[in-house]
Length: 240
Image (cartoon, rainbow, N blue to C red; front, top):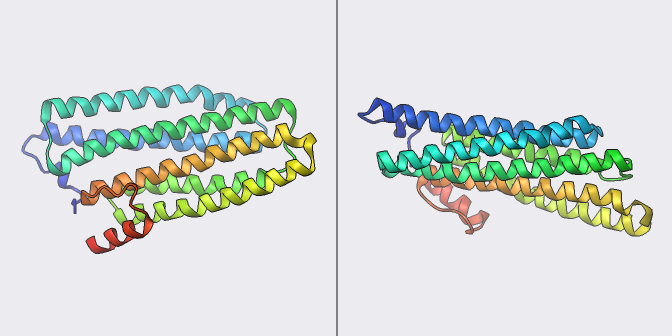
């Protein structure tokens, strides 16, 4: 298990600073992405095209930050040749920022659906589901970043487990909306905007789960991707 300050125990103070800055920049990028998701959902629910446009513009800043952090990782790998927990941190950062950038992309997609709905008129159904699932994936993203900040595998596991609930609620919402479209064909185009937005929210939950899995790898050195929630929980429990 990695100790919370393990990556700061080096003779080189400069290396310590580089590692702390790397971690800090990930959390800064995470904060930007959280704002993107919040604003995208709000723009859709409130039919706020100006806010939706700002989400689209700000996605470029998220992309720039991903490239910058990637360059930091490459520099540390090339010049410091980190080992053990430090290497895991650099690798985790590299994977995490990829998922954060993709969350930003999904937020931009939601914003695009919001703009279309402001032009064509609000959909007759689906906003309750947008709010509900949106709140859940926002919390998952926040909790995953908090688990990263604290090297907290147990909190990361809880995030991964929440993703299953989101998937179930997403499937239920899809069935209801498809049924509604069949009953009222005039609503199809607008309800489809809601469906694509819900799909983006479900994908945000998937990326939050990915970040949580990266945190478990960071903490315990165990790659828990593709092993299933039960085995993941057993591994975390065994490492307590």
